[in-house]
Image (cartoon, rainbow, N blue to C red; front, side, top):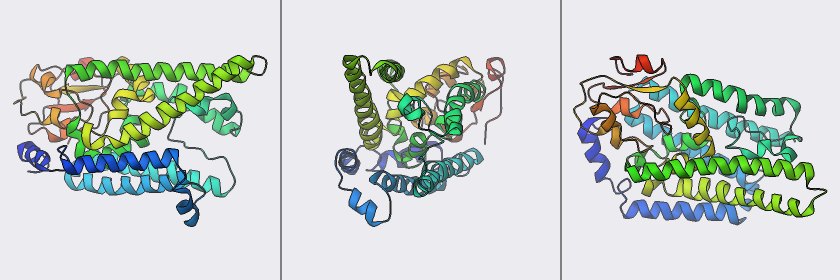
Length: 356
């Protein structure tokens, strides 16, 4: 019964690694030290070169992929009874191994422009910086625009943000796999929800403003040196604060203390954009009426801090902008109360069978 129900909860909270015990703090401090060294020193560069890798970032990509593979194997050993989980984690690992590591590595070896197909604006904000965009081959420039502004809205309105946040994005994939032991640590409080709505949309606004300022700097900076200096500072600040501090150090290092989706929940501009689209689309968590026994498994294992039990007890199917559609609430429900549904609000209110 460790896969589901109360015995699984007891096992989770007894583990020193996953219950904010001493071991968890040691891991968090170790991850913090690793990311500080990665971003602000060159200590890993000699090792990368010795291994025949072009940079410390390629070494980091290799480590990232290996950690995800190991985390995915662990996750499936616990939750692999669900076909949804097996396929989702398989896609996570494949996208990371092929699109986010092997392909860019091969491009660098061939002297071509490294390009990460699985990262889109505003998460990969620099792909729409004019100086970067004009250097891309035409087909990559077209891909960046079409994927970001055509494919993303269509897919999100139809399937919710899960297609990206829980299946494609490398940040989410690391949380799905390596971060799984800490998913229950995400705060379910109303205060956390309030903070989340402010911070994540503020980061999206910052990403949009930064993109506009950098574009204006590229267009007019040559004739307005004061504005050019301001534009470069804005770009540098975004790269440092959002790209390094929030997505790297805070986003991963705090897994053992605050849960695996701190970056996704509180700061990711892509998650904010997709969440707004999700609220307009067809995706719902459907609730089977009058079946909830208030065990709390769904809320406990929600990595995005959603109090799913409160909705289930009210027989209320729902759409939350933060939901990444991981399906864990459905997976751990002992009575099959919950289901991920993409057939619209009217259908979501009907009794449905669980997704198993």
